[in-house]
Amino acid sequence: MAAFARRTLDLLLPPQALDGGPALSPGLSGEAWSRILWLSEPVCDGCGLPTAHDLAGARCAACESRPRAFDRARAACLYDEHSRDLILQLKHADRTDLSGLLAKWLLRSAGGLIENSDVIVPVPMHWRRLLARRYNQAAEIARPLARHTGLAFLPDSLRRKRDTGSQGGRSGGARRRNVAGAFHVPERKAAGVAGRRVLLIDDVLTTGATAEGCARALKAAGAAAVHVAVVARVKEMESRPI
Image (tube, rainbow, N blue to C red; front, side, top):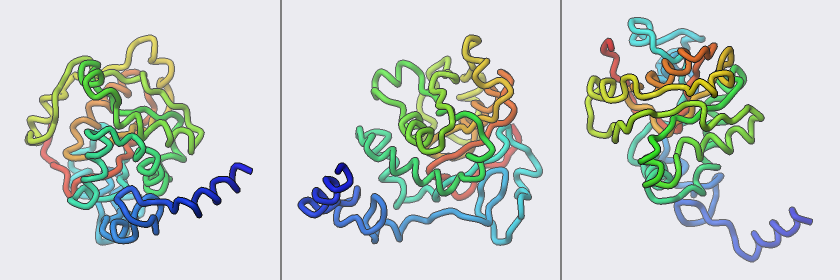
């Protein structure tokens, strides 16, 4: 009866895409869907960078020259003018209704990581910033992803112990200095990650500084591995040594 009611409602009020117009593709109009640069194999197994050739589990030159603190990373799409608007709407415009759609994007792009993970942990916000924004966009994406996958959702296992401010506009080196030592796993939460493979969720991967800071804290608490799944990533991550 519930399914019949939904179909009837769709006939009376045709579904609208989140960007306006008819929802020809899941959540988006066909035009908006076609503009997004989706990422799929072949990609570097370490950072998820698109590659011209199938590396078959191998890593790009940057990851080979400087292994990152996290084990593997995947992104659903490239961060550009077409994907940016949806992400910023979730992040700054109270559009938490977008979180379910973005979680489904991660189901597609991070399937291999999900299969090799035990728990899901969102990149945390400092409590002052959380009070101001009222929600953590990474947690909003991670929650429906956990429901879809059946993995344990541990929203409080990782904490940001100082307010690092926005990473926007900072160089790679400045980003790393900004988040150095900013994350930790509270002692009472360590048992939840010790020996487990963690899937770390965030909205955007830029230089990887935040993801690496989180990965170090999780591994210091005993995590067996830390994989990173994000909605979007910049085309090239900075590869200079830390």
